[in-house]
Image (cartoon, rainbow, N blue to C red; front, side, top):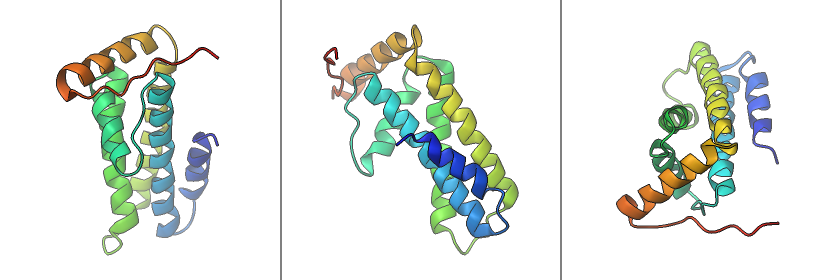
Length: 149
């Protein structure tokens, strides 16, 4: 499934008439950005962790990727996740339509930034920076040589 389908759904729901629509839009927008980030790192040859640990895995590496816009996308992904958590779990606190619109817009911008990583020369720069970060800082290498198809 194309994760951008989630973003299309978020665009529809954010125009809905109720707070439930807006909260659901923010949740889908976050997961669209999250899955594009996952696809990027997997495409670059990294074995992304599964489950709840995948969120931190992605953001730590994106923030250290050596590309200013994609690094900023890592930070923004953290903010989007925080907003998604508030939308999904903070039901006693009102969630405004204005905020939902902003979060969906932010997810669009985040995905545009992440897409820069799929093409050269960015993909090589990002791969090497993350590999070095894993080796020197994390002491845990998750990059694997990918076989040619």
